[in-house]
Length: 471
Ligand SMILES: [Zn+2]
Image (tube, rainbow, N blue to C red):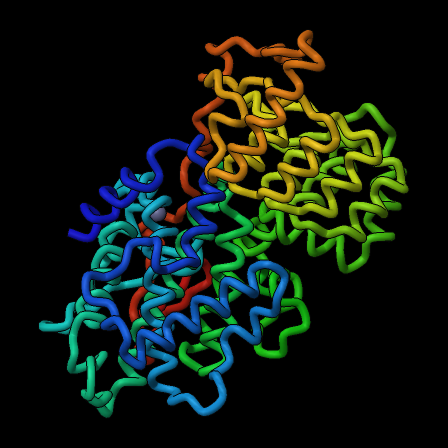
């Protein structure tokens, strides 16, 4: 049932990649616009008000605020009410994130619910107490179904004047343990798809928020964080409660290696060192990529200091990521106005395109970054360029004000610079564009070697030298 609603949801909100997952992921934090459990908190009730507060606070933090503040209990509020509204908030986010990833998560790609090679999760049947090994989609579907049932149960999440049950916090802990395992699976098995879909910044933020929340209210056992240890260390450097181990091995290291945010973080923590090391690499060899790529990452993250530093060091403004995004496109996609300005004044190609023949203007218009659109128009970008689907920026604009300013710019450009009309500076054949459109990468990285699976110990945790099962 859940998968059905997830896939319907996906069809409704995420029909094709070019609709812009970034825009969808942005909207995801505005709960009023996204999928909700059928029975949310009644309009005008206390919980509804608190929920709005939670959503608004979170939304504010995403534009540069402090996530740690977003998780804290607002002064004078009941902690159980705060937990309740956040259950719903995290449910919506997890539902959306997995809704997108579920396309890649099948019984064959993920035959066992696992987080990397070391951690597998068994499902305990509530009635019989029997432990079952389920495929990841089955496990996650049951988890989300169970959570939805709880959220809709007024004896657990009271409506109106009802009161919370005595075991409410235990129920909440179970819900958050399930959320955490879903993220552990997504990061360990589907990080490549997450990156290919351009979702990693948002999914990283979602994980960071979830982690800060569960730490704030001590909702999960620290062992649940073990599969993501390396990534968490990068996302939350210096956080005292993140379990660390020297030389975090295996999958978590891979996640760190592949997580662009983590690379950007590493760059942030010691920019001089990284830049110096990379700039000394001979140019025009594959390793020079290692130097130019950080500019895309820093631009995407709006890391003004790193962008300036890299440009000072001579980073190539036309370096591209795997999607062909230049630093300018990456910054426009993420609404990084300041970085957009810096790059434009550094001579970045303002009409450069990615592999979908989309310019920075297309991206900013598509995601809805009005100020970025204005900056780009001001800089004299070509507003007539078409992407590989034949659309101009105005065709993909998501808001009326953006559309209006683009139409205005089009008519001005047409009257003053007719030679530029509909000229695509970087034409690519549509066949070529089609072939590069499918971002599905290598098969999921999962341990399906069932023979190496372990016996359960009395403590409920199973470990041997190759793997460990968390119940
Ligand atoms: Zn999966």
